[in-house]
Amino acid sequence: MSNKAGLVHSLRNGQKYMDTWPMRKELNLLFPEQRIIKATRFGVKVMPAIAAISVLTQMAFNNYQSMPQAVIIALFAISMPIQGMWWLGNRANTQLPPALAGWYREIYQKIAESGFALEPMKSRPRYKELAQILNRAFRQLDKNALERWF
Image (cartoon, rainbow, N blue to C red; front, side):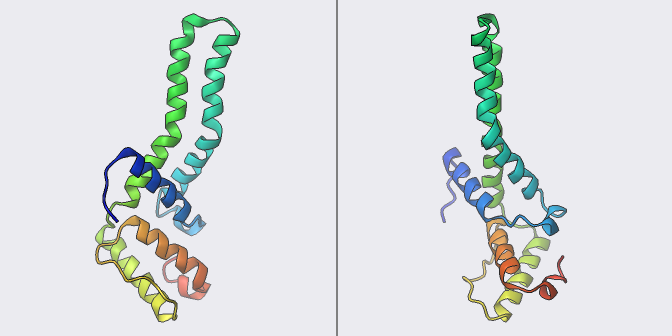
């Protein structure tokens, strides 16, 4: 994959990372992703309505003097889920710190020992590879194999 730094590319990566990250309570204390993903999904559903309501109420009450403030509130509301996806996109392409990279390798080897086919191990894994391997581990390994880490 190329490391494009564009905003649209980051948003697209954030959407993919949001779909890839395993939403498990075991990971909640270790990573902020689950909280960011929940807030972003909530924002995608709710913030467009808040933006529309903030502008439409000023129009309905003929309060055009407050329209600039309403537009600013609407823009802020619309930007909230975009900020979440941008953060997730940047996080997905961030390299893992050494401790987490070792954890990634341990989980990868445990899955490989179980006989499941995997794509080659990354020498410098990123958070999106960690998300993929965690997803795979939760789907394919039994609870006894996961006890060591969780």
